[in-house]
Amino acid sequence: MGTEQHTAPAALLARVDAAIVDLDGTMVDTLGDFAQALGRMLQDLELPGIAPALIERMVGKGSEHLLRSVLKHVLAQDSQALPAIEIEAKAEALYPRAWERYQHHYLAINGQYAQAYPGVAEGLQALRAAGLRLACLTNKPTDFARPLLRAKGLDGFFDHVFGGDAFERKKPDPLPLRKTCEALGTAPARTLMVGDSSNDAQAARAAGCPVVLVTYGYNHGQPVRGVDADGYVDALTELAPAS
Image (tube, rainbow, N blue to C red; front, side, top):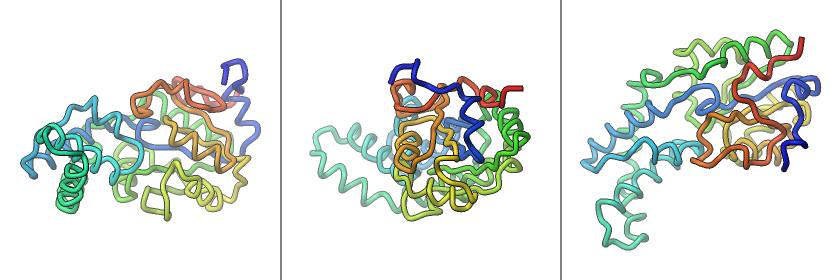
């Protein structure tokens, strides 16, 4: 889709009654938290570490997917002669212990190595001032998401906060967006999805929501402007309604 077909972000707001906002990579840079919690988990399991740059490509599809991706990667590096099917089996055998240690460490450091992106609070304030209802929808577990929003002073902007465990399926499935629209009392066509990745865009397209992507997020290490979306912003302040 060429840029000439995109709608100006502020113009999109005139067509919506609410916005659904992603968390990791959209509002808060949590890569430092992921690196710390995963590093400590791997130490507990006596496994090699993993570089933050690799973690960044694995973020976005929920903690379960992240852990399995990390385990398979480090096991492959540690046991290069093993076939992929054996590495996957080893990762699955380690997963329950890995998940317990990851939860332990993530809850202990949640938000300490993370920063809200510039303009996030101001952008959310402008959306609220324009009369939009807001919900946070993330693939991060709810018990991780709520304390993080609170720690960064962002929790007060949202009518609802839904984590990856709130519904039967996660983004990029459209179900979480549809359920969030129901909670907000808005039609999908009048509910803007704001995210940072193809997960958010695919879910929005399938749910019938317009979607805007931030340019500074993760998107599995791929350029976000290559993702089908209605627009892109360099900061959430660009979503502020035109005065």
